[in-house]
Image (cartoon, rainbow, N blue to C red):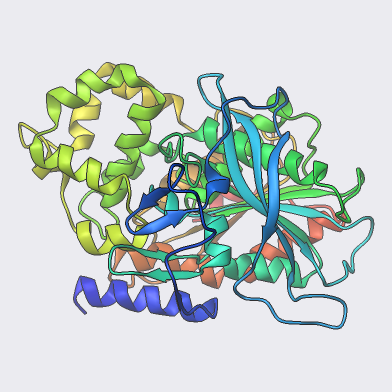
Length: 443
């Protein structure tokens, strides 16, 4: 099957899973002076951060009702629940205050487990880098097809499955995705980990919810989201000791960006290379002279183009691209990274697995995943076990399906039910079983 046909099949299947239909590419009206338009999508004024932010991480900046596209009337209220759009304060990797957006959904279903209704923070997988790609907007418009962008809210499926169990959900949009004041710092582990943990704080402070101080908290994420939840689990003891975690699911985590960069080059998701470089330069402008020295005009144009794209756009526009076409000397970005100490050090600092989570974690990875490589995800579990963490390791055995993207995407669906069940057990105060002793014999 040609690459474009495979990608279209994945997009259509995902949209069908969440019951999406094509929706208008406009949302809440904004005043002309404040309007931000990204690939034909008008970003609601809500996403424009104020000049000043609260002093405390996780503090609410603003909130408003969020209409869910996939909602039905029910006896006890709308199904699956009532959603609220959020903006809250967080801190980026440079120690600067930043506004982050997201959404909280109060489920209509009752929690059947022990204790107060629990809360799960969902960290989305790769959405893209354009503000129109934000997961909170995906809850309102699950599928946007306007001739300029293709945005799919594929995380809606996991969110609705959690809500059906009576679990409250808060979703983060990450740094700069949705918020119009900065570029999304794609796969920056600190920015993502902080955004996840501060989303929990923001949800807890939202008035009128059923959450209590006794509500247990879990984290759920796959791919980019798996890296974000893994980072959050590591950072929680130092950054958010007030947010004790009952459990964390980290599916297909990009724990070692050096290995992931090599793997995605030339793949269907090669556009993620541009998002990564854009994010690195946003996080550390001192790297810009290095980028300027090595990127040719095609590379600079690709980075600019990708900065406003969603994952669907990048799959079609840059699927199969090789970074050798973006550089002045024809070397790959991976080779250039290895030759530049500043870049090597930056990626080394992004490594997840150097700190011990204080709560149970479940690491899942497809054994045939060659997009976010299986070996580096397994190594995260090994690294955590070596530090004494409580790790449940789940290799997802699947055959090579002939596409790096599908090899990576399939475990998201096949393992999702088991991942939600594992996390639900942690929220129900059931103890986790560590696989660390058996890990050397597991693939």
